[in-house]
Amino acid sequence: MKKSYLLLSLFLVLTLFVISCSKQGPEGNTGPAGTQGPKGDEGTDGTDGTNGTNGTNGADGANGADGANGADGANGAQGPAGTANVIYSKWFTNDEFSISWDDSLVSNVLVPETIARAIKFAPDVTGGILDSGIVMSYVKATGALMSPQLLPWFLSFDDPVMGVQYCQMNLVPQVGGILYYMTNQTTHDATGLWPSTGYEYRYIIIPGGVLAGGRKINPKLLSYSELCSTYHIPQ
Image (tube, rainbow, N blue to C red):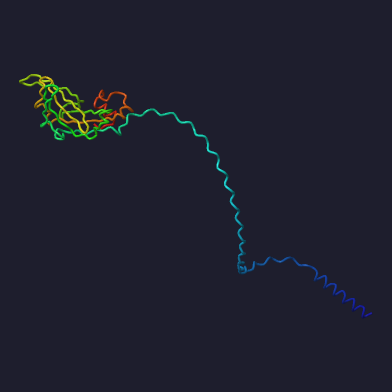
């Protein structure tokens, strides 16, 4: 009996111990965060994959057929007269004649007349120019209110002994040169009537091709300024 009582007491003590141990107490506060550990080593790069094989180029296509030629456009309007072949001299004086007025008195056997003449060397006067072109020349007085005069130029003066004299200056183009001459139509004797040193001369040569291609009016009918403007000649 005494032994049974002792066992019962031991059982009750164990039961109370188990019950008191199984009961959970309240949750405690969260503790502070721990120190972060060191960063781990980086991993090694992986091996690159192999490049793929390039594809083959496609074949070029065949050339297309040529298109038909377009219709010709209409001809443009004719431009102004060309000047590339127009020849003109600078203004020159008596001193620039190949044969001056001073030593060129001659007798005309066809008409009993004495003329004064001078010759200007002009290699651009060719046989072709004489056949189909035009050789023109102008004269002007320096220091006077006189516009350039196209030859033939008719002039007059009053001689104190012989009275009024009517004269003419003209030219005769020749292969390689131009002959200038003075006549006295009153006495038919031009002795001493060569122009003074106060005159200047200029010749202009217009080939036949330029005349045929661009002439709308005879150049000799144009004034000096109109001629220079038409053929782009510096005055």
